[in-house]
Amino acid sequence: MAAVPGEMEGKMRKNLRYLSSLCTLFSFLALAANAQDIPAPPEFAGVRAYIEQGIRDGLAPSVAVAVIKAEKVIWAEGFGYADLERKMRATSDRIYILASVSKPITATGLMILRDQGLIDLEAPANRYLPGPKLKSYFGSADAMTIRKIANHTSGLPLHYSFLYDNILPPPMDETVRRYGFAATEPGSEWNYSNLGFGILNYITEVVSETPWRKFMENKLYDRLGMSRTSDHVRKGREADATVMYTPDVAGRFNRVAPYVFDHPGASIIHSSANDLAQFVRMHLNGGIVDGVRILTEKTAREMQTQTSRRPDGSGTGIGWGVGTYYGHQCFSHSGGMPGVATWIRAYPNDGVATIVLTNTDRRTMADEVTSRIAAVFFPEGKPPEPPQRDKPENDPSGFVGAWNGRVVHFDGDIPVTIEIKDKDTVNVKLGNANLQAREVRFDKDRFSGRVDAAIRTQDSYHGVPTIDFRLKREGNRMTGTAVALASGYFALSHWVELTRGQ
Image (cartoon, rainbow, N blue to C red):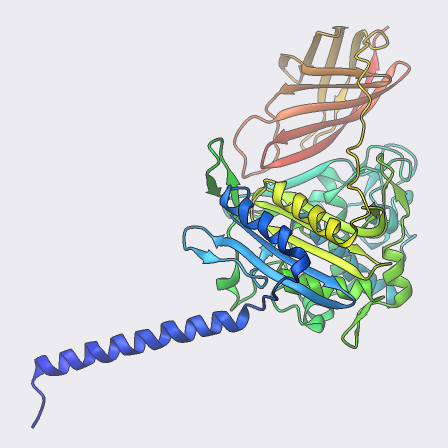
């Protein structure tokens, strides 16, 4: 007997519900299969309790942790929500954007080419730049070598640029034309530079004759099984991507809109705690992991060797920060930008490493979890003391007068006069704008002060930036930078030179 239309409709609805249940089950099983969490050993119970309480207290939406000991991952776990709106739980396989933890990864790609004899670390970076060249206002641009860029002593000043609303950054040649200059003599000072690592990823692309994304995936990520790592969320991995959040004044987490950079090698890499564990194991083991050699042992160790010195006494090798933590030698890197705070610390003499990823720019959890894990491994050690900063003298006596000169801007020089009357009265004429400086400081031979002034910066920003003058006096001459600042958007440095009127 044939079924009547109503019965057929009912059976179809029942079958659809059954199929829907199966799809949900299979999706759950697939998710479970991807989540390669490893339970924490008992000694980390206190760290786990801290993370769980921190999540409840709103210190971060999520935290992903991986811990390495004796070449093995002994703990890998996610806490909280990778996506608050969808209630998507964090795991050690969720994909986080890394911010500056990208730098040692970018440096590793560069050093693959060095091992192939295609890059000379002591050569001027300009040798490898096909278009506009770096310039130096002190000494020679030839002294701006690959090594000095990698250890932050090339003279390149403060720089970061985040672009929103699907606006693309200018080509790297244009970024070099606008901002590629040394504001201090190359090799003379340590000055952290995101632009430097954008230049290094560009050089990697030029020398390898391969798009940077493809080169890094083929020569590094895929060889190590880092299938969740690239300069974007790979196709098919979209469900594993975390959402970035920033807290408001009430402690509520707000989504951070996606953004891109004009310094991708410094900040753009996406990865998971488990993928990063593979990367760090390779560096701990002298360039090889699970039988796959990425770098020669000499090169891997060279990256971990200090070749520059920061003001706090630690230093930088090639991509890695180098120093001690809890009394033990380590190489490391942290990351922080809108919606992101991250840490990698590795202790080569102990065969230990920690990875902590969070999807908020509030640094508390990333910093504290890294510290608490170190305390478990090294109970005899002590956390480092915060650096002691000398109080500025705030004595303007050597600066009084009218200083005339220019701000070098990519659209053309802007005339500037800074008239210093006393420590509270500093007038600035920038172009046609007459302004009074605030947050003025005088410290030995240094002057700093801020004004708000409209200059062209990036296409995704429509406000008036703060111009932060950071100048050094030598007799009747002051030089340095005017940094265009907009929180969450950019810090873009422009060369300044001034002469005191007679």
